[in-house]
Length: 572
Image (cartoon, rainbow, N blue to C red):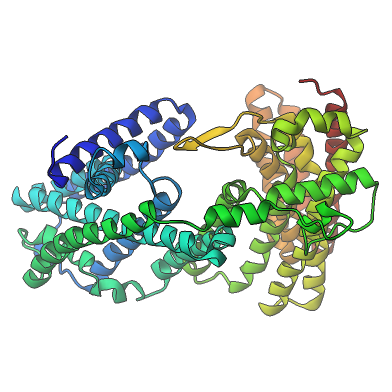
């Protein structure tokens, strides 16, 4: 191994990047998803490049201003947020850490991680962005533009990777040193993720907000790319982007080395915090109840069901990785929701209440019942022998979801009152969310028993996670979100719900029968859809709430019975 840190880091980075490629080839579903994303991004880039070549715009009329530099800086901040999340969850320490840190100097190990992540970023976005750069170079007649685009791409990726490395390792160091942060790291991480992605969506869609980001040198890369074209650019900004970003990449790498040294070679409070969290109090008569304090399970149901409920709550409290996995879709949905709210001027902020009404039931049910067999882990045989009936076991899974979800149903109602809904509408929303919480609590165990996952998934560096199966998540989401969305829309926007239900029944539901030749059934469904359009608003408001809730509760009852039977008949 070379003694020079840069050369050794380059070799470490090559090994890390090649290991990433080998690991990706073994993950079929992830590889397919990544391929689809790259193809979509590449297709958009090819389309933009073709449009530029076909239209051949007059670049002399183009002027680079703060309104165009700002969006580039905003995308850089978004990239930093994504890469920081990767650092904190996947790449905070190198693989084979003990071997690597005794083989090369610590700066070489840090530089290797930076090189590897830099290569991953370029592999994802490099090709499509260079295609657009080549189109601009062709239209402007300046081959130098393609080289400048390549330089800008390298600086964009390098500066983002270094910034994310410094931020991510600093956050991990803070958690490793401060007990309060270590105890609440999952909640803090969720809040930061939602704030980052929600802030990106809000700033990106608020008029003029992105122009304020033009002060960041990364936004000046647009001047650097177009400096050899007839476009009106600032030479000072172009030179400043090259010098400042290159300087930051070097200085940030050195700073990252200092933070990594403190993190990798220093002591951590996390083992002590985890050990303290695993201790069960013995000062009371019920240690299991003391372990989940201050949350308490009320004295309802059988003692066995209450014990199962207490243990389910304790498992969720001690499995922050699983909770983060489940809440990741919620963070994405929140980001999309915020972007939708601020991106459409005609959409009122009152849409926050319906969005919260969708999230509360989904989260409440998914936390406890989507993978009960997998959550038991190695003690599954003991559970099968000690719990006298499947009914008591499943009721113990339903109970904590109700304990969390029913109080949470106050949140959408409160948002409804705060954002302009009438008290009657807020009360209707409270009833709807409470009913959908019950639906989610009952449906989750049934889906979890139908599609169990008992084998852990390797996340990184040997760490394992046992999340619910993707099929279980998908089926559960369709049922719960479909039921909740229909009932919420009927309660708050009956005219919109009437149109949506009519289109679904007369269009989407009838389409498969048209393909199969069942024209009589398709015609009947279309006629039913037309009849729904003629229903009065009051009928939609009542029926659109009552029918989905009744259907959901009936399906939930069937799911509970199915889960209980499967538990009673389950064999290892």
